[in-house]
Length: 118
Length: 110
Image 1 (spheres, chains in turn purple, green):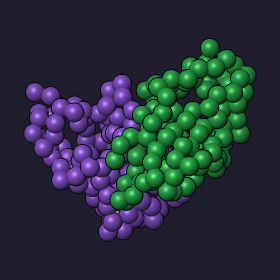
Image 2: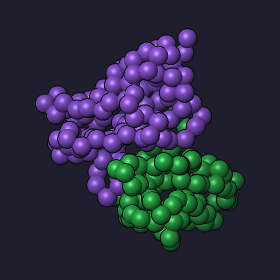
Image 3: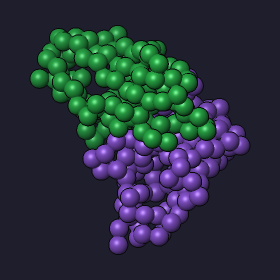
Image 4: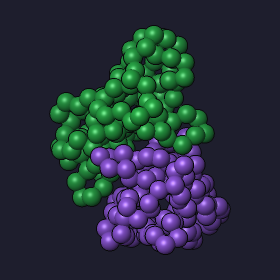
């Protein structure tokens, strides 16, 4: 069974940092692009970042460039999102999702909540 | 990277059909056939319903269909059922190695 489990969320002060993890199982992790998508409370989905299977290619939404960094450890079947200089507006549930070709984000993890507040 | 434009809400009665539009630009929806649609029930993770504009994953009801014309993609749900009540989001690949989501549409089954 394909599973994605996010962790690492929590409460952090503005200007702080946090590293999210997404542990996967049930498929050959290194063969797939992976994505991070976030959803602020009561708001819509926003694409954050993606990374190629070998980690050599990554992309970011403009509002996250320079502050967020995506990476992966294929030996540990784990995806990461390092978030620095966090702002109140970064408060959201962060989901990881597998990029399953032809534009599919499938499946998704259950999400981890990041709250940025003083 | 502006969000794709979706209606905030749509509604329909059981058995009816509804269509949700998703309007982008020449840099996303009209440029690529990588439009997909997701269903999200409250408190749950999104679920893939349509990919590559009109393809349906195995296990998704054939009541769900997708199409695209120019810079507007559409999701049609026929034979509305109570369990279809949810939020729906479109997404498209966009120039610059990025992806963009729509703002989401709340479907109410009357």
